[in-house]
Length: 342
Image (cartoon, rainbow, N blue to C red):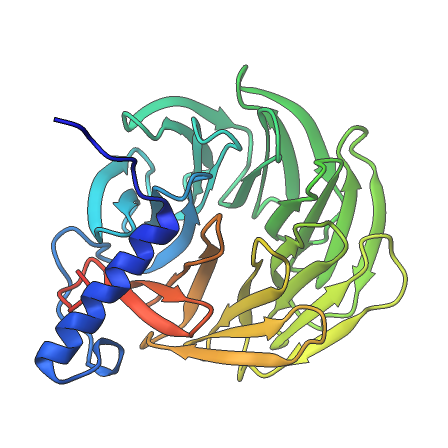
């Protein structure tokens, strides 16, 4: 018996959308216009704080206030694992560039390392005094950055489990970190309303980007490294030149604080999410708003594009993990719920 080639992630998403359309036609209704169904037992039982895709797009990971990290097959809409170990809320998750390591961080002050294939915890990074609010891997290798309520950014060698640098400069909590595509620069955003850029090799501050009038909750580099996006409690998304200089643009449409930003892999689209229950898509070059994605019933805390850009995940206060087609603005499915797409 011969087995054909495996479908790509994009092909699987297209197949799922065809299934949704067929079921909608049979039911005589649109899935994304229907009220959300009841929460299934294999979904989060509280607020979802973070989502991320594996580098190959085959796995989606979510984490939240129920203290769990959950693994999903994003196309089948099926939970494939639950990672438990944190004492308290889990606020951030990140994959290593090769997908063999998953990091999670939470209110217990720990960064925990996992083997996503087996679900086994492989290490614990200790050093923060208080909640760890952000974690990210460098684009290559095993360097990991974490940040939290102690106002410090820490760099780690995830292979040896050793801290390699302590970065200080923010006045207050650090809520977000992101590496540049070449791994040479780290951006951080915090409660002091600034975005700070650091030289990874030396740990020295390169520049401070000022403009937000309240906390900065999210930062992201564009895939080509030419732009930085930041999100803040002042309700704005701001675009910056990593080399310094004047602020490039201020994107205003959210009705309240903005919690997260993410660039599409092709750099053309910027996504933002916030307290107004929406995910908004922007043309990353012109700053023109392209679409409003509205399915959540409460604040949206986190967003992430799939590696091929064909899917956007969002999650937040309503416990839902929604998957969208960013090209059409269509809701593909809601993970962990009854619904036409599952």
